[in-house]
Image 1 (cartoon, helix red, strand yellow):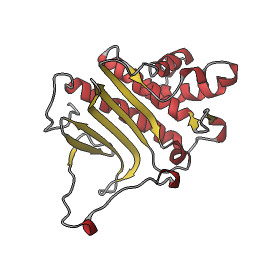
Image 2 (cartoon, rainbow, N blue to C red):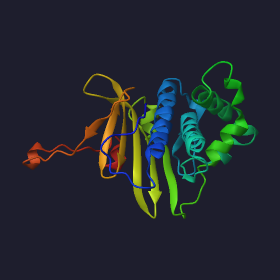
Image 3 (cartoon, helix red, strand yellow):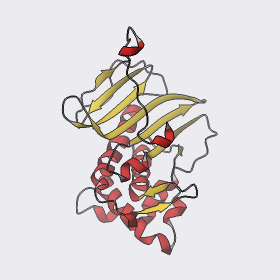
Length: 231
């Protein structure tokens, strides 16, 4: 059964396989980061030059998305957020071990196959996100958009997009902690061909997403960041 969203206006470059691969990649990463959120500790983070935090889940999400895309679609160019160099060297051994543990659960979930995921595998998958944004076709990824929210146990997103000739032709946004109207938790949005659908929780059946047409400004709803510094 395909997870391809219905009623999309497809293009030759965004076929069912491409949509399915992106959806699978983001949902896999969301499942792992959500499970890891409660056990991320201070020892599982590092601070980048701009003072922003990075967790083992950031690296794991990038590795999972990149490995899934290449497994399904073959060689792809990905512009990611994280630098594989931060996982290399003796001082990063514990950090890398934590990332390997998370990635193993998604890429090789059974006890018999977990050992097949190595540190070198993880570093190479994260390094796939080091492509340059100068080609006609490439993916762009923010493995955890909202790391501070993630660390608080709050909201964050996994954001993946396919860019062609400078235009976004496919976007997938995973929100693992979003509470849905039906009581489930987690939502994955897929936008392509001018329309958007959402998968609630673990459902394989998407629902259409539309923008309301309020009759007055008082009836409109808007969203803002939970981070005061972003407002």
